[in-house]
Length: 364
Image 1 (cartoon, rainbow, N blue to C red):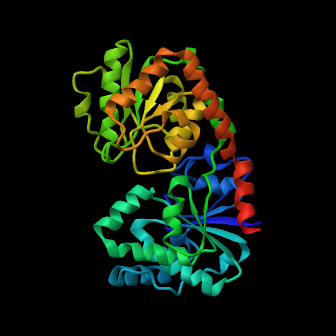
Image 2: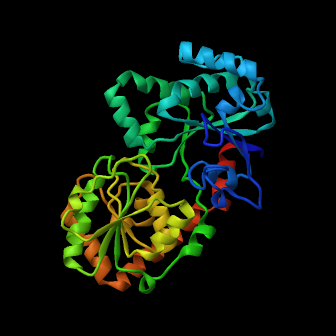
Image 3: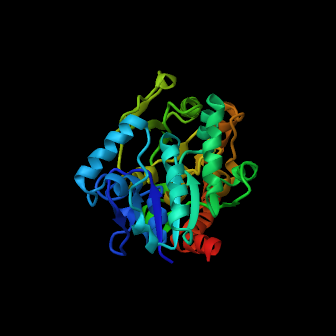
């Protein structure tokens, strides 16, 4: 089965092909491919990552044609549909990614794909968490029509968050399936560190601009009062302002943003991860946490529910309840290890081998 992921654009602006020597998780995200996210699908299925813009104005497109297309895009808001997608004929299955900012272009593309290459199996998946999509639809109700039309063009529409499956099924009559996002389990677990090798650090994960992330800071401050030898850490995210007002008066550090591979090593050294994200995301934070042997509390992500079932949280979960979860983990090493044994065992189901079979079973 020949497979590719189609996103609107990429940092490299060019096609990336998986090789056994350089799977996505060892790659440079600026010059090659994202070591996380949709790059994982590409390497799990040994395929290609194709930015749509590379077919429209990429290096293999006549420069003059590319200029005229850019002009038309600027004037009309849409790319002209005269671009060539014959390269895609060689693929059996395409995973087409929908995102809010360029959803109209992905909808136009998927309709073109259906017309010109009707034999191709088309999977669809959203890139934003359901909670972020929901906020956009609430702010602009008519915008939900776009993703419904996108879904209707797919053979199978995927959600990577199990709890959202009934919601998506109400939006379209197409085949909608829950499929966890692939994860490079074997590679990530090389960073595993047992409880007695960890430092006294409470790491608050997440982007503070996202609803309720600051709640995690309050949890960390309360835990630090109970465990004064522990220090709080947060990571600076390029291009995003970090709000730390809830950490005032506590002992904390802001550490530089790190590439994913280095970030894993850092997470392996901390004792507890606090991530109060309630956007119903896949839960990359929790997958990373499981791989390196560090429990995560606070989120309602898919991976939080699956990997850390005893540490469930919702938007309504209070700071006090989360502090109790953290206190039990930090006080009781046996309980800590029990939680991690479950997480690591379940994480193995996300590896590339299992992920490849799940997707093949949908389309073959």
